[in-house]
Amino acid sequence: MKTPSEGPTVKVRNYVRERYVRPARREKRATFRVQVGEVHHALRFANRVPLVCNALSSKKFLEENCLRLIRRTGPPSGLSTTVEFTYQLLDGPGEQHPLDDLLKLRGAFKKIFDELGGGENYLRTERSEFYHQDDRGRNR
Image 1: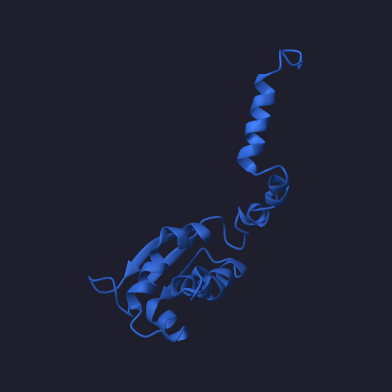
Image 2 (image 1 turned 135 degrees about the vertical axis):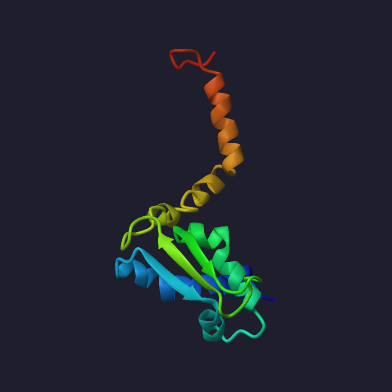
């Protein structure tokens, strides 16, 4: 059974990030374009054009890469290999995504919270101790 990290939508997002987004940032471009047919062909998909179109216009893809979709061209259905997306890099061309360093810390305190009985237990204990102290920090 495949895990979500191996799914085709994730493959599309990862491929476009590596092939288009990162080079655009390195080259300090303000915008870049992605054609659905190129992505579909590169990933050797069969009959997955709607999936590629949806992945490239998804809120998750835009937020993960700090992008704004500024133009979508193609047929009225919007689901064709000729569809082309034009994106703007929001955090400045060539700059690192502002959340990259923060995302590296994700889960850093998991082990500590587990040792304390879990995050909820830790908060419950802290709250009970806080509410049982007077203004001078002494327990009532």
